[in-house]
Each structure stands twice: as structure tokens, then as C-alpha cells.
Image: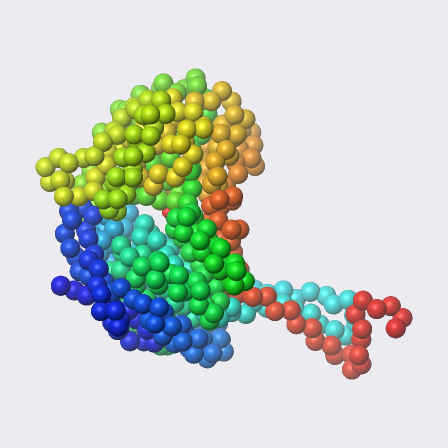
Length: 493
Ligand code: UN1
């Protein structure tokens, strides 16, 4: 059985714990390998290696640092199919989406490599004569990355690439469910020749490895994507140490369909947004806010099309919806369906496990739509992270915006309308970090900031140029060439 190890200071290594956990294929329950469960001591070693390596890395010119990122991009491109196959086996998303995800990492590598020659600072006029003022970005130090299983390579790329190009070293804890993709990504960094100690991989649980990272005095920042519960805990622990955190913690994203919308287009957007990746995206569509005059027509069109969503093993190219990640997730989704029924929502379609022949050993759930949902119901408020969406009827754009904004999260929203005035109004008023007009809630591009308002995060952004703010400090520099001591802010001294 293949064993997946840690990568510390340029070496693949085990842990003193000598404990391994099985890696499952969610499509059929097959054991794919096993992964080392690390201890706090492994985190210490990784941090030490990172701290050491960063001392010289910060002095390497950024365009030279970027050369490694170009190599990462080329290697990822070469191995795209190989990594995508592993991603589907380990995580379950369908192969076309897995390819798309690896592409997201490739794009991010090229984009961030370009940053090595930009990474703009500012030059500004000084208050005083013969004085020059500028501000530049400098690395923070050692970046601790904690990443989720639903986008095991894309999200790791959003964090590790900007961290490295700006001159930091990395200690990375991938999700326990997806260590094989993490291994593949680190192999790419290794083969790109990245100097040892700059990327360190520590596998294991959040409660041991994650906490040790958050508490470690020599990890200068934590960048985390995952559940709200864990994000809040990280925020509390890191906050007590005045440690910088960048947190991205999910959504309760809505598509709004107005009375003048192209309904077929809206249905395309809803099916892809709600059931792509089996609804396991932070950006997944889980609410459908619809003008009451087109509610029935929309429901009918959704029902006509839902049968297209063939369930199965994502390695089968004809499959549209893969399994969910594990049993406990499957059960949690089903519990939400029960809650929806108890709250009085009407089940339009789905609402059950799928155990037909060939799928009986996997974690399959039928694409599910509730209707006549009211905005205060739990199924309309809480993140389900599965293939379940709720239709909420409204009477106007204003009401739609109010419903859209009446949840604790603010990641993504979408509106379908043919009225340009309404589109602009929605663009302004939808309180989310990402807004789509006439497109679904998923599919953010890597060169734009990714993140959200309210409970979705703490104001930082992944990807896009904004992500540089997570991994750099500003240093302001004043150069006085007057030859005498000039006192700022003091008149006639
Ligand atoms: C996530 O689910 O956390 O915008 C990331 C999207 C993808 C990334 C999703 N590009 O849906």
C-alpha cells in the first residue's frame, strides 16, 4: 500500500508517531493508500526549516523567485491529466472539473510568476524638499497554510504561490482527505528545484497539526480556507498571539431570477452552480430567489432538466455529479433534508441517498431542490455543502436583494435579468465579495480577488493581486538628500 509522507527541509520523511490513516475513494470506498499522522514535533521541524530557508530566500530578487513559479506552471501543465485523475479518485469531483481545477493552479502559477516582475510599491512626494519617499512590499516570514479537500490543488495554489513569490517560506497542512494531490503538488515544487525548506508539507489532523501551526511563535501568518467553526477557532487562537490570519469560510450563495430573465440560461446556471462538485463549493448555489411570476415556469424547467445529471464515479466521462466526500458528510446532508421537511419546505425533487447497483459503496446523494422555502428556515440560512438548493419566492428586486443579504455569509451571488438598470442596481446592492450578472455563482477567475463579506471571512482575499496583501508587510522608506536635518510636521523650528 502506498504511504504518503511529510516533506520537511527538502526530504520526504515519516513521523515519530508512526501512525497512518487510510485514504478513501469516495466513489466506491476503495482504500487508495495511507497518510502519515504527524505530531507537534513535526510541525516544529518544518517551521525551523522554513525559518532558516526564508533568511536567504527573502534576498533572492523577486523575478528570480518567479522563475521557479514558471517551472511549477510548466510541470503542472505536463502533469495535468495525471493530477486530475488522482484528484477525482481521492476527492470525487468529476474528471472534467478536476482538469479545470488543475488548470486553475496552472493559471495561478503563471499569474503569480508575473507578479515577480511587478509587485508594485508606491513612490509619493515627500512633504519636504530634497527628500524622497517610497513604500515597498516585504515578506512576512513563515506562512502557515491550512487548506480544504474540496479544491485541494487550486486553493493550495492560491496561497502557496503568492507566499513564495513575495519571499516567504511555507508550512502547509492539506486536508486529511486529500493528501495524494498535496503530494503531487509538492513533488512539482521539488522538481522545479525550489530551494529546500521553502515548502514543507505536514500531514495530519487539524487538532494536532493545525493547532500546533496556529500556536507556533515562528509562524507569522495563517491562511485558512475551511469551515466556519474551525475559522473562528483559528481567529481566536491566532488573535491572542497578534498573528495575522486570512480566513475564508464558506457561503450561502443565492441566484436571483427576475421576471424578465432568460429562464433557460438561469436553469443552466442553477444546475451547474448547485450540483456541480456535488454542491461542495464555497461558491455553490444553495438558494434560488425567484420572482413569483416565473416561479412555476422555473420549477418546471428545473424538473425537466434534473434527469440530465447522471450520478456516478467521476472518472466516467459521462458522469455529471460525483459522490460527496465521506459518510459523515452524506449523513449531514440528509439531516438537512429532514430539517427542511420538518420546517415545512416542499421537496420538489431528490431528498434521498442513491444506492443503485454500482453506486452502493460510494457516497451518493440525489440532486435535491426544495421549494416554498422562507428566508428564515435553517435550510435557507445554514451552509449545507452538498447538492441541496432552496427556492424562495419574492415579489421584487428589492425583496430579492434583502433576502440575498439576510444570511450570515457573503461570498457569491448571481442575478439573471435582461434589464440593465436592475443589473446595475443588483451589482451595487448584493452584499457579497463576488457578484455575477447572467451567470451562476461559481467559476471565479484566479486573477481577481476571491473572498467575501460578513461571516465568510475576515476581510482578506485569496488570489488576485489582493492576495499579496496577505503575504507582505508595507515598509515605508524616506531618503533625505538635503544634507541637513529636516524636521517633518514642525513649522519654523
Ligand atoms: C471554493 O469552493 O472554495 O469560483 C473555491 C469557484 C472556483 C473556486 C471555488 N473557482 O467556484
